[in-house]
Image (tube, rainbow over all chains, first blue to last red):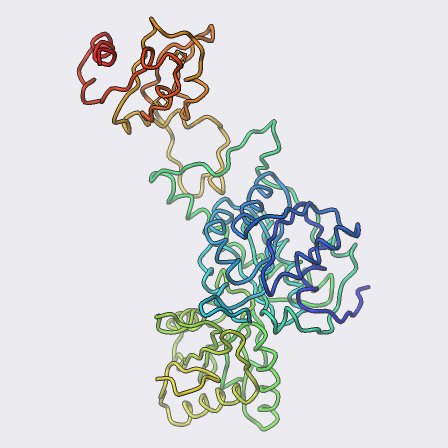
Amino acid sequence: MGKKVALTGNEAAAHAIRQINPDVVAAFPITPSTPIPQGVAQFIADGQMDTEFVTVESEHSAMSACVGASAAGGRVMTATSANGYALMWEILYIASGTRLPIVMAVAARALSAPLNIHGDHSDIMGGRDTGWIQLIAENSQETYDNLIQAVKIAENKKVMTPALGAFDGFNISHAIEIWEMEDDAKVKEFVGEYEPLYPLLKTDEPITHGAWAPPNWYFENRMNQLEGLLNAKDVVADVGKEFGKAFGREYGLYEAYKMDDAEFTIVAAGSVCGTTKDVVDKLRENGVKAGLLKIRLFRPFPYKELADVLSGTKAIAVLDRVSPAGAQGGPLFTEIRSALYDVNNRPPVINYTYGLGGRDTQPVHINSVYDTLKKIVDTGRVEKQFDCLNLRGTWG
Amino acid sequence: MSEKLLNWDEILIGGAIKDPGNSKSYETGSWRVERPVWNPESCIQCMFCWVYCPDSSILVDENGKMAGIDYDHCKGCGICVEQCPTKPKSLAMLLEAEAKGKSEEEIRKEAFSK
Ligand code: SF4
Ligand code: SF4
C-alpha cells in the first residue's frame, strides 16, 4: 500500500527517481529544480538507490552525459529548469533524434531577461518542437505519477523517444502538498526492466549512434523520428490506464473537468488548473455552466481528441503561461484554435497570457475570464482576442 | 559506391547504423583543394601519417607498410604533411589544379621540386 506524505513537488520528483532507480542521473543544479538532483544525491549517499550520479559543469554537459549513457544502453534521468533547459537545447534534439528514451523532470520557470527564477512555461513551451514528449502536471501527485509513467511511455518500443514531466516552478516545486507515495516494489514492478534496442555496450552486435546523415538520408530519419513521437499518444493513454489499475489513479491525454455540458470553457495546463477547478465549482453552484479542459499531454498534441471535447462548448479562453512572442497568441492558443478549425460551428476562442515570472493568478482573475466568455456568448462579439491576466495597465 | 536508399519506414530508428565502417562507401575525395603527394624514396616508414590522418586515408599494404594515399577519401587537410618527420621530403601538398591531368611521376616531380 502506498502512503500519504506531505512533501514538495521537487521531493515528489526526487522520490519518483529514487523508486525508478535509473542506471544514470546526470544533472546540474538550477533553481527551482535543484532539490531534485540534491535529493537524488542524498538517496544515493544514504544507500537507498544505486544510480550512477554524474556531476557535470553545465546543463549542456548534463544532457550530453545523458545521451552517452542512454546510447550505451542505460536507463537515464535528469532534471532542470529555465536557462538550464535552454542550455540543453542543442542536445535535446540530439536525444530525440537519436531516439534515446531519457526522462527529465522540469520545474518550469521563466527565462531571463530580466532575471527571474519563478514559475512560468517559457522554458518548456520554447522547447515544444525539440521532439520530446511533454507531460504537464497540475500538482505534486501528478508530478510523481507522470514521471513514473513517462519512463514506460518513453521506453515503449514503438515510441523510443525522450519525455519530460513538467510542473510549475515554485507553485508546485516548492509547495508542500499531501500526495500518495506508492510502495517502492510496486513502482519498480510497474516500470519494469529496461531493454535498450541498440546499446553501444553490446559489443558483439556493434552499432553506430550519432552518425552523419547526408541530404539523401536526413529527411527519412526525421520522419521516422516523428512517427515515434506520434506513436506516444496511444501509449500515453494505455500507460495512463495501466497506472490506474496499478495505483488507482487513472490518466488520459487530458482532463475534462465538468465539460459534459460546459458552455464556457477554459483551456489551460499546470497548477492554474487547480485554481480554475475551484472557480468552476463556485460558478456551477450559481448555475453557470463553466468547464475546464486541462492539457496533460502537450507533445504530441492530441488535437483531434481536444477538438472533440471542445466542439460542444459556446466560448473558449485559452490560458498561456508564456508570452506569445510575436505569434497570433500563445502556443496553446494557436494549437487549440487550429484544432478547432475543422469543427462545425466552431466556438469563438480567446487567449490570455498569465502568470509570467511567477505572477500570482487568483480566483478573481479566473472569474474575470469566465465573465468575458459569458459576455461573448451574450453579445455574440469578441472584443479582444488577446489579453493579459493580472497585468498592470491595459493591454491592447 | 552503391548504397540502397531505404524509405523512411524501413530504416533503423535514431539514425543507428548496424554495419559499422560504411562511411567507406561515401567518397569525400572531391572535397579536396590540395592533395598530399607521397615520395616512397625518402619515406622512413615511421607510420606517423597513418596515426595522425583523421580520415583513415593513409593506405597500408599487407606488411603493414605505408603504401600511399587513398584519394577517394583524403580531404586534403595536410596534417600528414605537417607531422612527417622527414618534412618536406616524403609528403608535400600540391594544389589539385596543378595535379590535374598529370601522371603520378609528373605530380611527384611537381610536388617535390618546390
Ligand atoms: S591530407 Fe589529411 S586526410 Fe589526406 S591523407 Fe593527409 S592527413 Fe589524411
Ligand atoms: S610520416 Fe612521412 S616518413 Fe613517416 S611513414 Fe608517413 S610519409 Fe613516411
